[in-house]
Length: 210
Image (cartoon, rainbow, N blue to C red):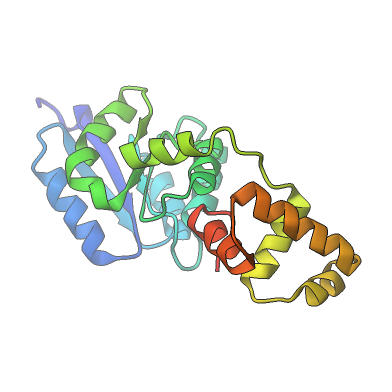
């Protein structure tokens, strides 16, 4: 590269120093990339983005103070042209779609970073999208599923928190019969055997955060 301005300028956002260090080492080996800044949480990511205006931001989702999804939305609101690539351990299809709808240009799982990261950075920089193979499979598997309604999602979250039907009914100001009907719908839609199984599916797919 003849000039630093031609390099793909990258901001890495992750609350684990070892992850940031590993990615920094990978970037260092690439002749067309440079690491311009790092951030341990979403709040600092916004500040670093304003300061450095990177070409590509690599964003973890689960972080203290401010999570990656909120930071992604804030950055994209201020800088609509921002190209943000999500790096996470979470492969739930609901979580993936949430990030893509918020404006992420790609979604990679951390267990596949060595094989996929550099190619994904170049693809997103070139204006394309980048989804890890596992993320693509997750989306495809549930593409035709009937989604839970907002009311059913609220009930599922309360189930995951350990509440009984009676407690859920009191909390949502509805009858216990209404809750039982919603629980039946949830089990059918998720293909779950029981309430515990439904809660586990909800967590795995990113519908519920514990």
